[in-house]
Length: 116
Image (cartoon, rainbow, N blue to C red; front, side, top):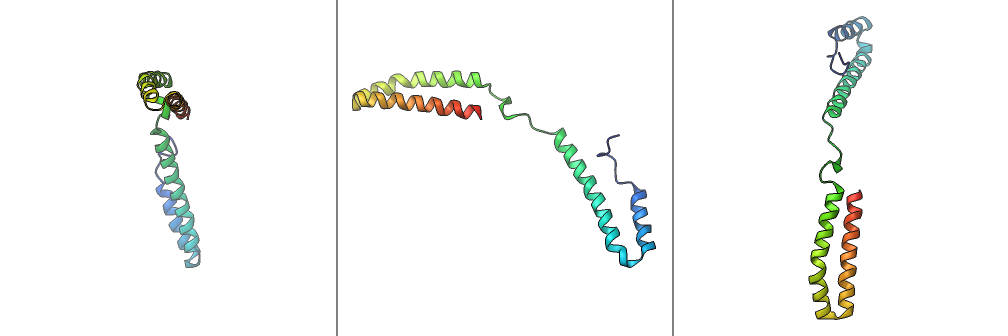
């Protein structure tokens, strides 16, 4: 059986109590500290085992990045025509350039975000 699942042996607690009685009250703090350390170690082992057993899958386990990139490409293409028309109507060539620069920046920032 895994040592992280074994309870603290009763023999160990009893041995600590006997040692405390034999050594006298001067050593009570030392015996108690040693027993507390053993209990803390046992608890830490159980927590590590529990966390390892219930570890979350990696963050990229959701939507595949290729699918997300395809969706972003379609969104960028869908927005490109209306933004180009609006940019040309309100600001001329500078508006068209600004619209396309904005679309490129949106796409690049989105792709960089998916790589993290």
